[in-house]
Amino acid sequence: MRTPLPGAYASCDRKATYAGLADYDAPFHDRFTGGTFLPSLSQRRDFAELTAANELDLALVNPEFRARVGRSPAGTLHRFRPLLSDQAWTVVEEVF
Image (tube, rainbow, N blue to C red; front, side):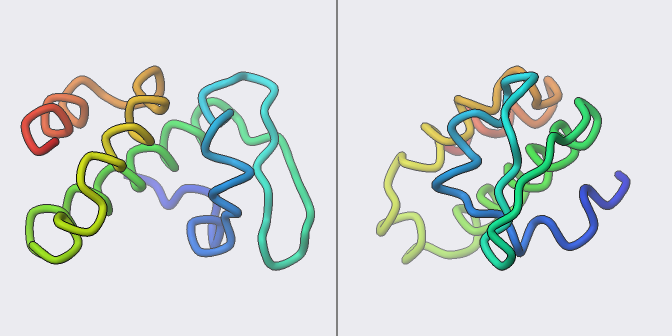
């Protein structure tokens, strides 16, 4: 997988970005600069896959994380469904 939006994973203002990430014209919000930009479909897919991988990894290896967040990552990842590969979505369904 290519590195999505170099540096963007850490800089993402998740509250402002996640809800619309699957929408073609939804901006990506940078929490450090306050700036926004429109990522390409490829960039949005890569970002969604990285987010899913991170949330799944945390849920699988950290029982405290899983207990704290319950099913909430599944809700976030459900919004990303149009961007996620079938393989990623299968694991999301299995874990959450």
